[in-house]
Each structure stands twice: as C-alpha cells, then as structure tokens.
Length: 383
Image (tube, rainbow, N blue to C red; front, side, top):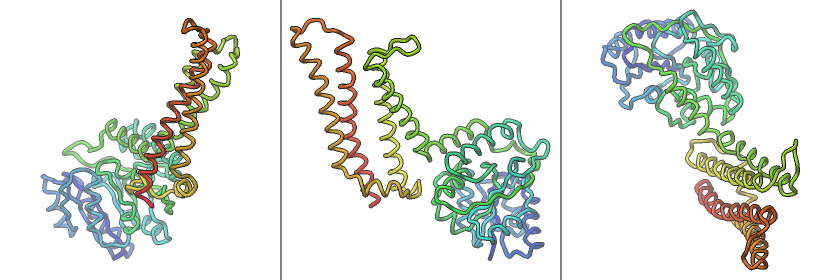
C-alpha cells in the first residue's frame, strides 16, 4: 500500500462524508493504492458510522487532543506515505496526488501552503483576518528564522510525509501544536522538506464552531517554539546581557562621561546584574539543550558532542574556582582599606570599584562550579 490518508475527527458529521469521498476519488483517479483512516477522538454525532459506511477505517483514539488523534491514526497507517488533513472540508482532498508526487521524488515532508507568500490562495471567509495577516505569517517567519524551516504556512494541516520518517521524530505534543512540532523537528534533523501551494476553502461545518482557539493555541505555539530553541530563549539574550555588562564595566570603572552622563558605581551595579543574569541564561541554554537531546525532545547536535569531547568537568571547576578566588581577592582589597581606616567611613566611589567587580566575579565563579557539575550530570545520559 502506497498511501494512507488520515483525518482526525471530533464530531465532523457535517463535512466528513465530503472529505472521505474526495480522498477516495483522488486516489482512484491518480491510480494510487491507498486507504482512508478516520482517527476518531470521541465523536457523539455518528461520525464513525459515516466513515465506515464510506469504506474508511475508523481508529478510536481515547487520548484527547488534535495531536493525540493524529498520532493514533499514524500508528494505524499501513501506507508507505501518509497525507493528513482536517475533516472540516476546508482542504480540497482532490489535491492529494500533488503531495504524493513530491513524496515519490524523495522528500521526507511535504507541507501545504495556503498563503499567497508561498503561492497558495485563501478564499473569502476561509481564514480569520487575524490569522491570515498576523498570526500565521508571524509564526511562519519565526519557524524560518529560529529553525530554518523552509515554509510559509506553518499552520497548514494538509501535508504529506513518509510514515517511517514521522515515526522517527518521536513527537510528544498532543494538542494543536503537534503540527508545528512536526515541522520544527523535521527542520532540526535536516530532513528534506518541500512546499505545495493549495487553496483554502471556508469551513463547511454548521453544527459547531472550529476547534481552534486563537489566543490559547497561539500562546501554545509560541511556548513550544521557545522550548524547542534554547538558543533563542536563553543563549542569545544571555550573550547580549553579558556583552552589555562587560561594556558597562569598561565604561564605569574609569568613570567615563558619555553624552554628558557620568557613569559611576551605580552603572557598575547594573552592569554586574546584567552579567549575572546573562551567565545564568547561558547555563540554562546548555542545560536545556543537553536535557532536550538526552530525552529525545531535540535531535543530536554535533556542537554539543564537540563540547563534551573538549571540555570536562575539571575545566569548569578550575575556571569557576579561579573567578571566585579573584573576586574574593578584590573584596579583600576593599576590606583591607576599611581596616586601615579603623573600620570607619570609606571613600564610597573608590571602594565600590573593588567591591562590585569582586562580588560579581565571586558569584559567577561559584555558579560556574555548580553549573559544571549539573551540565556534566545531564551529559552523562547521552554518552
């Protein structure tokens, strides 16, 4: 069997018959040997009976959620290729052969595109303006920039893929973010992706509103994007903060005047805060990356492999210990000045130039020692 067409279903009696008939007709006209699977997620409107009457195979999925339903359908699929699509008649399943052609050419994942930016078309009333002009383009842009995904419509639910390839992604999400998880993981693993322009039609359902919830599902998508990218969530902001902190120290230690402003000890304090926050973010980036890889949430990264080959626990302990001792030494200089003054009043601007850098370096060193143990512990599971 070459193709399995999987339709997730939750009370889709209004449109399910149209979708199933189109799927069968598309395969028949193109000479594709295949099957239609309806992954039912607990329908109470007779949808399973409609599917069975039309020759579709019904798979009952107990775990709730769009992603859970699709995963159940994929697991039951017998075709070499799988095409998935919503059962609300917004996708024209007569376009299925175009996806199969691309899959036969060797692509791992073939993504539909409804937006004009990728050659697609949205018929009047088919997509809310907020989704069409803001949400979908924004998340598609983020997918391209954060993960290198060559797509213009990250939310399009009509797509095809090699069944074995999808199984290798080990997807975890059970809700609406299941579709974006597939694209992100495919991009991170270096899969071969293609995009097929399609036309989006108005939702044909009358019995109930669409299952999609704009702000709830939009937040879930953004949350998943950030969790899947320690680089953008932690590393990039961390590097920026450390750079800002270093620049602040370079200007405030000598008391530079910049655009009429005297950068003094208050600038040192804020710069120290930036450096500490930045270092913590970089530690979080490393921990999140290593944990994600060891748990199979993220694909292996050669850079992490190289890091563990070249950097050992002892390197972190030595660097952290040196930073801590140097910081303590700077604090000791200020303490000695206080002792010489009989523990009286000190020259605040002068001593703070020793105390603030010393405190920051001691804190960074102490955290570096602890972080070295934690990262090494996380890394042990992947060797």
